[in-house]
Image (cartoon, rainbow, N blue to C red; front, side, top):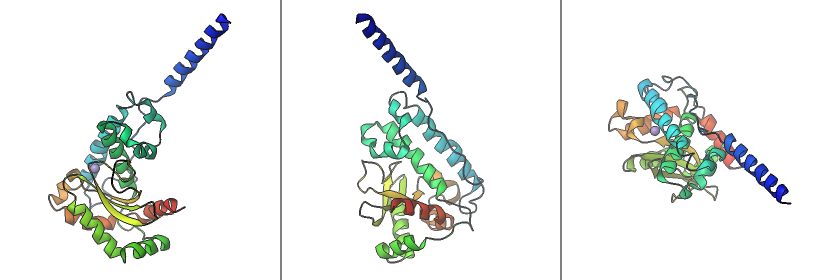
Amino acid sequence: MIVKTAKSLLVATLITLGAAATINAEPFTLAPLPYAADALAPVIDQETMQIHHGRHHQAYVNNLNAQVATFPELATLPLEAIMSRISRYNDAVRNNAGGHYNHQLFWQIMAPAGQSGEPSVELYAAIKRDFGSVEAMQSAFNKAATTRFGSGWAWLILDENNKLVVTSTANQDNPLMDVVDIQGTPLLALDIWEHAYYLQYQNKRGDYATAWWQLVNWHKVNELYGAATL
Ligand code: MN
């Protein structure tokens, strides 16, 4: 009996060690941009894209990976699940998991000029229902972008009542986080940190926000809307 217990303990220990060994210490990676770094010019210049993706986004990924030693479960959770329980973690996880999620989305919801598409019939109807017109939605979105003090993001989200809402968050927070006032599924995201526009637009955040609409990848936004309304 004693021998059997010792054997069970040994097996349990080996299983634990095995599980620990399979946790990837650097589970988060920086995907390449889905287009060339100069593909969004002249709205967003090549140098801004290279620094923004290659240095800023890379730093969020690196800093998030550095937190896995402290919070091993981060390696096993989808980013969206980390967001929905972000209040359990420290500021480093909040800022860097948020930064990683936000930038991944940002790159995907932009496309080179001429490849933007347009809102789907369903999304267009929802925008008309909740804002009156696409122009009114854009105006509300740009107001959220320009009135956010300091660094942050502007969002179009689908809230829990299936209503489209424009909102903004500070720093690298996002509407999936359980710590923000207005929660929902992100459909559009605009980075309004100075690192996103300063080289080209300097202090003219409003000009950047206005020009940015030329880059919106409506194909991707329609896909996000479709998934959120399933
Ligand atoms: Mn950024």
